[in-house]
Length: 254
Image (cartoon, rainbow, N blue to C red):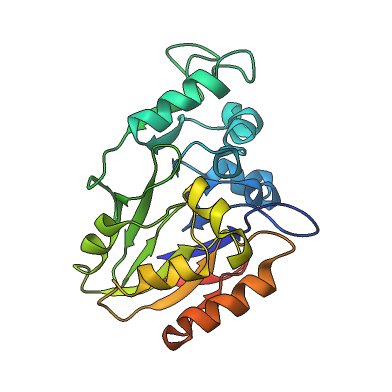
């Protein structure tokens, strides 16, 4: 079981791509701009998308996937998310104004897209892969995901701020090997981080004090133009845990 990072930036510019992770070639965890680097053949292989929340940097490639390869597939693309996130996709994206409603096109009986609601704590099992929604706290309803394979577990927090419920779950994962956690803003923008329900280095350090298990720690969602400075501040605040910057192209084996 391999998870490849297609994008992990909090914005675009240069070669930066927003959040998207490809699991074994057929499952996406979020669908930001990083999906756009996949070939048509690779897009056609994707059967499932697990969405953390409805913000554009995490969902913007879903409309393009179904438009590009929906007619080349034998089954619809399945989008897994909380009912609130799925409702946002229906209402604001696949509404025949912003984008065609591919949950009913080309026909109700053979759509290109289907929605699968998922609650916090619920697990979807795909062969030996177990994907569980974990709590997140953000401006909109949101989750993170616990990915468990034959060898190890990885937790991706998604976009979140201070979140005691997450750590109660994470600290129970005996085979935890990797933790991917966001830090969207540098310390000078702590007020923005608080208002937008993201983390900055000092808030991150406070959250990591709640982690009771050893894990390789990776920082995601860094803002363009502030990445290096933010990571310096992360190292100063939480360096004992050896946090690293998540990178596009990185592969995790689970």
